[in-house]
Amino acid sequence: MKVNGYTIEPGANLAGANLIGADLTFSDLTFSDLTGADLTGADLTGADLTDSNLTGVVLTGANLTGTDLTDSNLTRAVLADADLTGAVLRWADLTGATLADADLTGADLTSTQLFWADLTGAELTGVNLANAELSRQYERAFVHRGLSKLMGLAMTPELTQ
Image 1 (cartoon, rainbow, N blue to C red):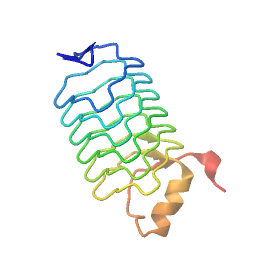
Image 2 (cartoon, rainbow, N blue to C red):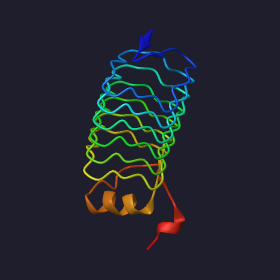
Image 3 (spheres, rainbow, N blue to C red):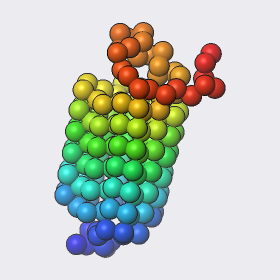
């Protein structure tokens, strides 16, 4: 399948691609390279991005409902205002990612790395954070808001102040 001149298939090289507003619903992009791609407002509902590299990708306002991002690298990705309802992010690396105002309702973040991630205003209802690794700043926020029942979280020791 071709979208905006790019071939959408497993193992695709979409580094730096302009896929703003693209319809990628139910696409198979497993093992793909989307480093630095711009997918602002794109629809990736039900897409499979397992084991993909999304370092620095821009997904502002994108629809990732039910998307599988298992074992993907989303370091420094911008997912502000994105809809990640029911998304699977098991073992994903979201270090330094921006998830401000994102909807993560029911998402699976089991064993996900969230060091230095920005979760300001994010909706976390029903999120599975089992064994997720978060910065100390979030541990305090969870305890302060009465969410201290989250289990298996590993916090970075350098953020104890």
